[in-house]
Length: 273
Image (cartoon, rainbow, N blue to C red):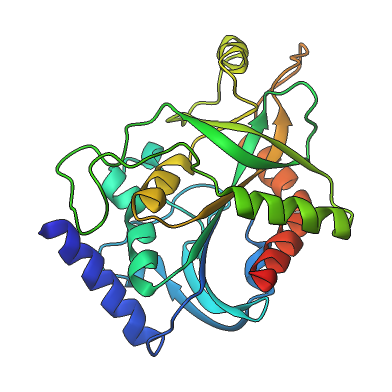
């Protein structure tokens, strides 16, 4: 099938460029969260534009490289920037890297994003563990199912692995890192949400909102990959003063400021697994 061919072509190229590198964990780094790449050791850097069938990352704060190397003493493959539905890419392209990571051999997937804080207790710079999500994007599994990749109707009762959440919370206490936990809502973007939409999403049970992550998680769970997800709260979408404006550059600055804590936590988790 064409889908499997695209996955195999990308995987074969990465294996060739990395001397058959076998990653233990995959990491997807969202807007402004690329600091983690700096502490990956023995790096192999492959620009997305070189990888067959990969899209190009056009979003602010997404550098567009696949990084292979060591983190926490284990082999990892990290996306320095992701692909978004709002960039005009179909869900097959948005989620292709997750399929490729599975073929490369990952045992765990870590996903991160910059998100608006709907929960009134959230502040800019907070880290929120994703315990669940609400998907308002097209489901990436629509279409003919490929049984080789996963079942027609994958269970999503626990999209984010409870054992990984427990590990993160335990390590965060030891490291003195304060964590929130909540439900992430994924919309298509690229517009930021209106105050009425923020209010509606909050009433629906969302604690944070963004434009990514969930398609990747659905595809990972389709392939039975345990997932850990984290949002960095980059704006407070729950109290709107007269001069309140959502600004992309401000989101990146807030994500950069909080990324150090997330980087330390991800590294520690991978080390302990």
